[in-house]
Length: 258
Image (cartoon, rainbow, N blue to C red; front, side, top):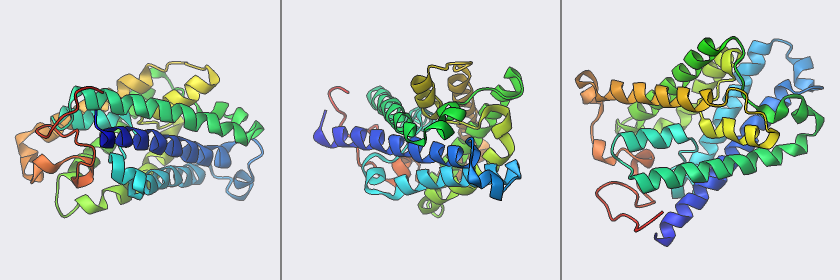
């Protein structure tokens, strides 16, 4: 495997760690025991909207950073799976990126210990079903479907491609505001994996893999529909927000191993 590809995997790992630490820190800040924000903003819906916007903003900033330019800033196994499902990433890239994301999520979750009792009150931001398994599964599936569909829409259209990172904060403000009470609004297996590994609480953890995979699959089926083919202009360039710094794109020189 080439040095540039190792750098991409390292950037994906660090970027995911920053996403998990920064995003869940927003959750703890707004909802942890003793939070002053809860005093200032007693309405939990308002705090969920702010939390979702902040979580999405962290992802946006990572995407726009040098780390994002190196790896494409998937930061989420569901996003990587979507690119793989479009035939734009080989198996080695899929496995490498997901491994990097899980390692990064674990590191980011470990750093949450700095929040002390506030973090402990929320079990360092674990995600567990809030209103029944079926409702939580549907909620996670829907959130992931929305995320992947918008990424495919934006990155698949020349006029929208440049705005892809900027749609994440408002999207998660809406999704977290409305869906978080049902499942925690993860839409990211790595986001759920890191805190679960840190705390040892694996309650219904399978849901936070299977539901995002289901949502991703639904989005891929939608965008494979002939009715949406007009959105797929310049589809061969659909990866990493319009560029391929890693060399993992199908059709280009592939690494010997990963």
